[in-house]
Length: 155
Image (cartoon, rainbow, N blue to C red; front, top):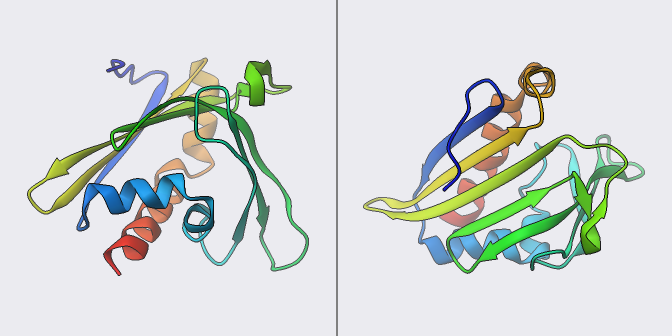
């Protein structure tokens, strides 16, 4: 477990009232992932998806229902079945350096008496990037997609 540095990191947690296997499936299956990853009413399309270390993590966004534009172009760093997903947009598929570095996210899932404890730990390279991500609405945006995930799997 990576320790949290409040000057560089942002975190958000929630208990999702669904089994961990359902939450994991919603993360790993791209057809499910598209349904909750971007705050509605914007739409998500998975453009590259290979959940293994070095595999593509590429999504597109349509904010108005029109054309899709790049959203995230990154790669998976770790995929620990049912427990942890680590991805970054500092690298792209095949461990290639990304044109613009920004963040690395560690998503952990653990059993909870009410379902699944979902934790997102997002690390930034410097305080400026962390502050910018927070000002862009990290807590609202990530909170919204986690709520959408919960709604999707709690069904």
